[in-house]
Image (cartoon, rainbow, N blue to C red; front, side):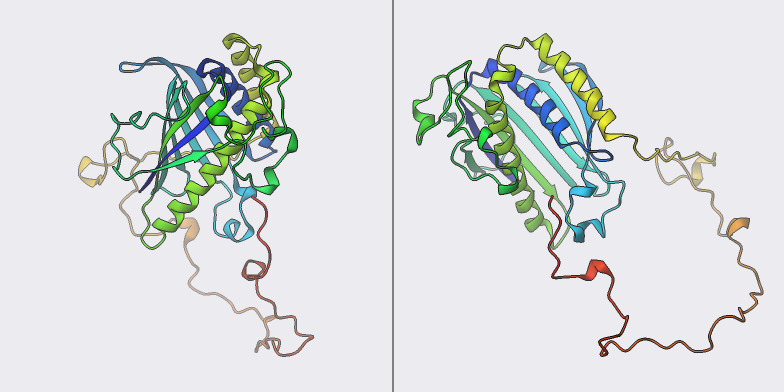
Length: 330
């Protein structure tokens, strides 16, 4: 398990960012979605929590297979998605990510928003955390964005909002900007696989940092599109965009149904609600192997393999062993 705290300052108020965040997530999800991959919204509804009060619950599936490098696609199932569950009690949110084929992988994010410059060192004191948790400050103007995601129109150093007159952020802007708010995120990554845990958890944190940087830059760069919206208007934008995104992604593979076979309770190894498998060692009739298999007369008696040393040889390794080929963009 690797835990880090991220602090991302924005030239906005906490109340303004509430609208901007919803707008940014909806628009970004729609832009990144293609047929067969992208973000599918399963649930988006009001939610009441006994501790945090009224909020909103969302569940999404993020399909990523075609965005993986070629070497990863060779071993990852085609029906591959990340499940995102989020509980929004603004200005406090909880987000969890799990993977459809890696049960030992998860990401847990707790977020709190405050109108300050990221100077609250005790904001997560009530949460269980390591004393030596690394604090990572993310500068939306001067931290480097992956080249494939860079757009000059979304660069806060060159962007000037016409409606708010905020922008053209100069060096040291965090100390001089008014208004200013900070998004505090306590992020825990778990990948409990021996031999790979440390490297994978560190890599995932790097990806999370890049996503946070890009998302917050876009939320500010699109400020003139959402700054005049009310909560009702941004919720309507969210709803219509989600419908368009789901339609853009297209149909998904059908759900596999499991039929439960009744068995005596002593034959069950799991809870009563778990589906059971009949206790038999005999193969079903359609898998029965014939006792006598006539030999095909057309088959050659011997098999000659091409000589790898000859230039005209047709012997080639499968494409997924091409070590020198460049990975596909994410």
